[in-house]
Amino acid sequence: MTTMLEPSPATASAHPSMFSRSPSVFSKMSERKKQAQRMIFAAVEGGGQSWLVLISEGVNPPKELDSARIPTLNEDGSPRKAEDVIEECVQRLRDMQMRLGHNFESIGIVSFGPCDLRPDSKTYGFITTTPKEGWQMTNVVGPFSRAFPNVPIAFDTDVNMVAVSEFAYGGHGNITSAAYITVGTGIGVGMCTNGKAVHGLIHPEGGHIRCPRFTKVGAVSKEEQKYLTKEGRDTYKGNCKFHCIDEKGEPKLYPCVEGMANSQAIADRLGIPKSDLRNVSDDHPIWDLHAYYLAQLCMSITFLMSPEVIVLGGGVMNREVLYPKIR
Image (cartoon, rainbow, N blue to C red):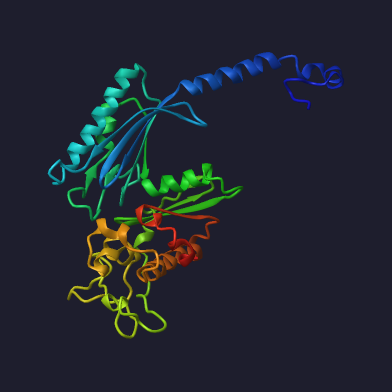
């Protein structure tokens, strides 16, 4: 097999100038590759239960060098102050940098939302109107910018970055778009088009897309009577205070998917704590209802954005029986 590094004699004699500078060209390419592999990057991921800080070396693929998880709860189960969690993340990165003796090339930060992603905004880098108590209007990027003043920092939602990763590294073939849905404590949607995360007025908030309440076709079983009327209608009001319940406390006709299909919604219907959801059998009819709401979300995303791939993840989606039901 002939390559540029091993030209055939015929080609070299016909075009001697083609290869006259190749050693220096390839030397520079090799040196750039080595420099890239020496680059040290920092990453921060914000979650409800913990925050992750990590440093890596190089690209394509990066090599993890160090990481740490910072809990958002105290040992007694009480919530820590948001600013204390952020400050500990900053300090952990400082410590890692000092041990390594090498400055960061850049820092990438992702978090649950909603987030302000507009660089010209006064609250750029903030978690804004999140339902997570104690995290409303939390300045995430600011403390890192002050601690690492000469390091470029990028900020986005966690689900947007998963969508970008699925586009680039998910093994989905030659695609131009991808969507990612996480289903757990909340329901988040990230979108990637042509290799870039979708931004705009804010960012995708697909978990709050409205949909009709579930109605079963056919007889209601005894087990389903816990959360369905005898006509088969879903009796659960929903747990999103913005989109599921009106001012009088009555259920809205078209609630949002998150309020009807997050992990708390499943547990509430069954009258069990969320920690016991793992014990619910795969053949329980609750998964038919749950799949309905997630299918409504997938359908809405498809009609609106037409992604070539939709990836579902998060704790609830470890329940593999959901995938064929959603399809």
